[in-house]
Length: 267
Image 1 (tube, helix red, strand yellow):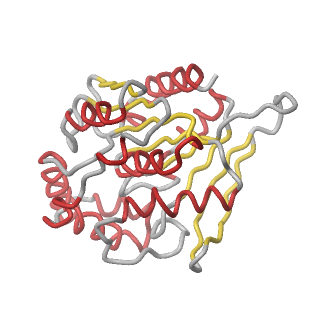
Image 2 (cartoon, one colour):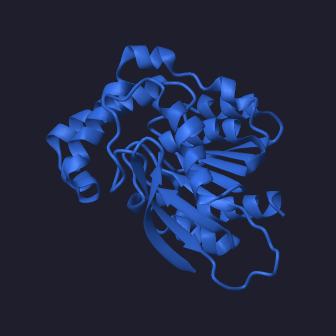
């Protein structure tokens, strides 16, 4: 496989940092396979996916695209403070624009946490361009565990070495990213505003909705409500002894789970 990092210019004078993983041999003439598109969490990045995208690309035989949203990595700055509709803009406008610029029409969306929510929105917005969808710890509304978890992390950010750990990935942007995340989620107006249920009925593709049974940032109803909203093409998966980041805590198990799902549903 070939792995290459580039910058992609979009309308509005912004640029997005992307990593593309491509298979350079072993394809039959005319063979068409979807591209895996990875959507990171609120404090995530290309690097924080670690080797999971590369491993899933290898296991499925699909190419992959991982990108840093505006404000992350080398991507252009994001407007701050974050507007209430930042996830919707990402799923409705920015991600489709990136795919159009790269000429990618056939995708599988893989989203974690905030990226899972964006994946749900994008799946509804992109329609038939999405062959399959897998989310981990996605939210369609703000629940009490989410808010409590963010408040607790804000204390850890001030009082432990959490800031130093995040700084390894986010550098000079660390404080801005952390404050942007906690500020919008702890805003009662945002909590009242956030409801992505309307996107679910528009999702046409097979969907796997994953959450750890010990997820400290989301109630189980997030999963069951998402599945109910999508309908019979969606399945719920609860993983025992797993918290908020299944792909990092049990990478082998989650890799096999998603790989089997994708090979079955995209055949």
